[in-house]
Image 1 (spheres, rainbow, N blue to C red):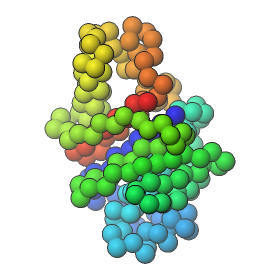
Image 2 (tube, rainbow, N blue to C red; image 1 turned 120 degrees about the vertical axis):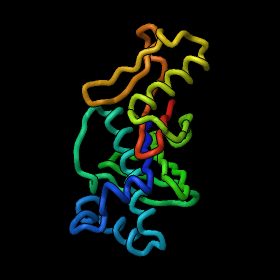
Image 3 (cartoon, one colour; image 1 turned 90 degrees about the vertical axis):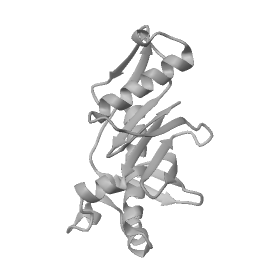
Length: 188
């Protein structure tokens, strides 16, 4: 199972003040807060940890078909080369992140050896969700040499996306993300 999340740093600065009282306490473990507070770039570290948690959460929801809201239940251990290990209760996910000056993108998988194919891109459209879905369907249509109309993106009751070709699910797992000017999807 996989998940992915992208955070546009400019958009995050506009939308969220992570320095507000109790945000860190509600969202991050004591160990994660120590990492943030000792970091040279605290903003980047907050959103790195956030994106890792979101990616692992999406993988967890896909795997167990159960959602929850408790970010501290998702515990990140940062490693080398932007790789991390994430624990949700007794479940382990492996995460990789890409950090640029403009965004952070993280993927998470319950299988360390199985990396998803990812696509990252800048969005210019106002309807980000539709733009990401359209880009995904066009890419898969080209890759599989199929008519666009034969592909349908459907979400489960929990919002987990799946892509179907003539009513047959075509990927083991799919994760979609967008924020600010950036979009991404991961396929396994």
